[in-house]
Amino acid sequence: MSASVELYDRFKSQVPAPALRRIEAIELLLERTLAWVSIAIERQTHAASFVVADLTPYDLIHQDGLLSVRRYRPLDEAEITVGETTQPVRAKRHRVPILLVPPLAADPLNFDLLPHRSLVRFLLAEGYKVYLVDFGSPDVNHSHLGLADYTTQMLPAAIAAVRRDARVKDLSLVGYCMGGLFCLITAGWAHDKHIKNIVTIASPIDAHQAGVAGQLLGAMRTPIRLVRRYTGLRIHKLDPKRLNVPGWVSSLAFKLTNPMGTLTNYVDLLMNLWDRDYVVQHDTMASWFNDMHAYPGGIVQDFVVRVGMDNALSKGRVPLGKGQEALLDRIDASLLAIAGTGDKIVTVEAARKVMDIVASLDKQFKTAPGGHAGVFAGSKAPATTWRMAADWLKPRSR
Image 1 (cartoon, rainbow, N blue to C red):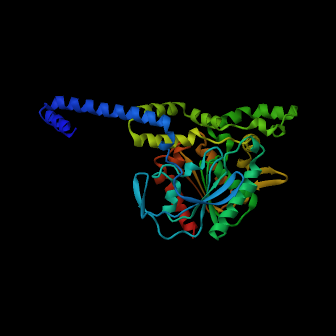
Image 2: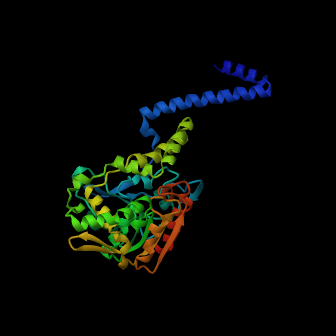
Image 3: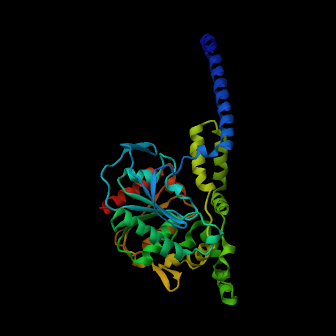
């Protein structure tokens, strides 16, 4: 075999430069074609090997039904790669821990995507004690779960678990999209003085300005008022089992917000299927959008009526049933709200509304590049959104 290679190399050394370039181009094409076929087959037979998310080691500190809470272990490395840069791992840890709060539909892996694009690893490297609440994957047996269940029971239980484990009362909440809304509603309901800091990322406070959904709600406002006035139909009177939204519906709806981008993404994959690193990154990101969780019917009822039609968050008062309500205008925790400049789902205006509502004297609103997913976990997020959050939290985590 080596003799054949040596003979072939000797042949190439005698070929004129123009012909040699053509030969090398053919070699490259053959090499990539073989790799393309090999990776295509492997993706069909061992698809999981191309998903490298959710790899940061953690310990489970709380488990109760759907709800679980993770504590991520400190990093062993002296430095890590984040995005396109390398940063040292801070040895001294901040006193105030962070609890990450995901949206319901998205799997918590979106906080710990690719090893070089993991918010969890980034925060650990910045010296934070990092916890994550996992609301699980609901099915038809959880149809009854509504806003009150998540914000007055499950999230407070996760907060209590973090406090027991960290042995401190103060903590910071960092929520993405609906997770940010849960943080605000829980804080507005509990009036917990030890929720020291809240960071929301792409969280829609003014539902009527929230992109396409806001336009639809605006168009439906008058018909809904008429239905409410002249009929006995109420969404909350319906069996929540009839309102469950399967995960695949959420995935499809998310993709339809940018159909051309979704198509381009698949074309790019076909063109780069020979590149294993590209495929790993693509499939890992795709696992976020393709494997979404279901929405229980109860939360659908609450979001359609209270958050959507009534736009309760923008008014600062969110009814939670049984005489309970969240008063956002009584939140005095330090607040940082971040919105994506290209977000078509949660517009900048929809996210900025929180500044008019919360009572916090220490509050800031910032924008970062990216759409709804990109602002949180895109290629620019480590240097923009994540850096904003980490630097803002630093003096407030002592």
